[in-house]
Amino acid sequence: MNKNADTVYVLSGYAKCSNAQHGKYKPGNKHSIGLLTTDENYQDNINQLKTFITDLGWESITFCMVEEVDDISTLSNDVLISSFLRAQKNGQSLVVNDQPITVH
Image (cartoon, rainbow, N blue to C red):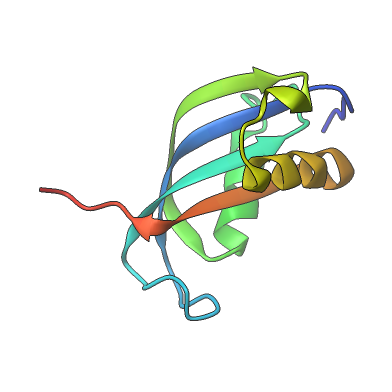
């Protein structure tokens, strides 16, 4: 994977919890996710990125939107800022919304 310290790609979507993680997520529930990666070739490496998420206990992963972030000051909340910094350090970072997605 290519690492560009200045740009982080934010892939937004959802995934289904496949195991109990820290008692926080119920298996089978779908949650909104955000994968932050420094991999500018994320489209070519999407299976590798999905494997990273699967290894963290998620399945049925779907991405709906991608945003390119070059400036950390454009991020509005602490969770995204810390995930951005983690992605810059480790190459990728996963953010999961605590509230499950409900269908009405």
